[in-house]
Image (cartoon, rainbow, N blue to C red; front, side, top):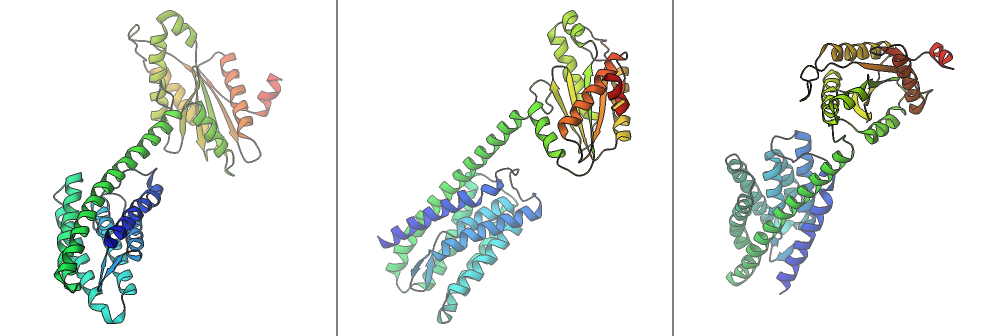
Length: 366
């Protein structure tokens, strides 16, 4: 009964540490043997830490230490591949030698051999199998098979060995079952949160950043010391498109314009729908001259392209643009207001043009 109680403690410790220590991966894509090496090494370190905690609470029978450490080894190998498993294995081996008295070093050597052979076996098998529940349990089973001879060598009687082995097999298989489903549910939960966060920051019609994300990004870029530029864009006579061809046609135009603007953006730029027929492009670390070039490219690209809809296959539109530049001496709200004034000047001056905000422009509009 004492062995069962100790395994239950090990069992609870395993799932508590998995839940807590895998939280840093909640915003990270699913980890596979093809993931960046640094991420896989971190995964190996976390699995190794879980193994160490299990070993510190292991069951001492004769000179054998019994626990659920093979589960983190399998996690490391199945998700992160050989680099992850090697880090986990190294942490287990070092801990085993630290915890083992000098007169019992044979036990540490046997444990090292078991872990080493287990990692090499899983490394070979992993190349030919996918990560599924049954394959995960298969790896746990391989670990059990390799561990049982070591347990036998380190115990003093068949009775003790059988008693330990039955509990060891049962709890490792159950631990593998629950661990796999726990990790699967955690990943599904994390992905659902990421999806909901993306929805909260995405314009449903165009798929671009929405007003909330643009405002958040403006507050962040506004705190940087480097200058940045803003381009505020409005579709010319968009009300006429809606009134003449219907709102479905207007939606088609908005979607296509969003795609066009996104295709012209640089990797660090953020394009979003600011509201209605207005779009905003945030250009980090961009001079006013460069912003003007980008704005003119957007304007001319839109003017020469067709925006076909179901009602009008050859629809053409134009856009008006306002450009503003800000530095640490301006707030993002001030920069946005300046871009809006420049946009107003473009529309008031005949549309299908871009205007750069200047102090002279402010005096003219005063």
